[in-house]
Amino acid sequence: MIQLSAPFTEDKIRSLKVGDMVEITGTVLTGRDAVHKWLHDGNEPPISLKDAIIYHCGPVVLKKKGKWVVTAAGPTTSSREEPYQAGIIEKHGIRAVIGKGGMGEKTRQACQKFGCVYLHAVGGAAQVLAESITEVKNVHLMEKFGSPEAIWELQVEKFPVVVTIDAHGNSLHKEIEAESAGHLAELMSKK
Image 1: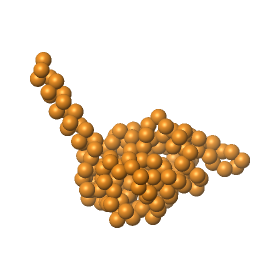
Image 2: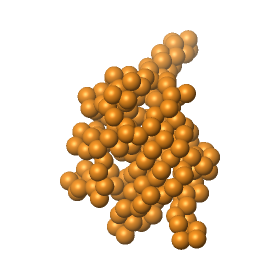
Image 3: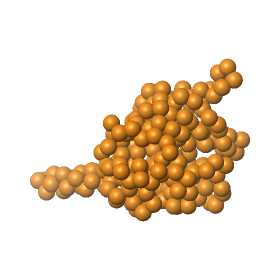
Image 4: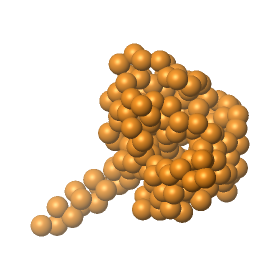
């Protein structure tokens, strides 16, 4: 297990390889569809995204004793952000994206060119993943987008992910698609 702690520098990110199991400690920012489109449309974020990790997640957050507490924080399907992600990585200097299901070719190329990785979080484990969140540091754009679409600034400790697109152009998703297509062609030829 590789320990990835803030600051999330390009050198640290480029040292990661497809298949690496990683535990993140530091600040992670959530961002889903509304935020990605809003940033893509040219709006400036309320917090710096340079060297940041963006988590495709709409966490379930409750106020308890005057403090925000995350009770569930599962990944959202990342492919919905494919039209926006590469441009956001380039413009804002993002170092990692967390989600589920992988991303497409434009994002893979941006990861390689700009020193970013795609990290896969386990779907269906929202409450378990929330246990790695030690603090809600802030919330941004709540009034504009509402709770699930806001940018939540989360302090995480040993947040578990797997590198599935690295900063060297490798994509586990692409490899699996190619292997699956080969198996399908083989099965179809036996008909």
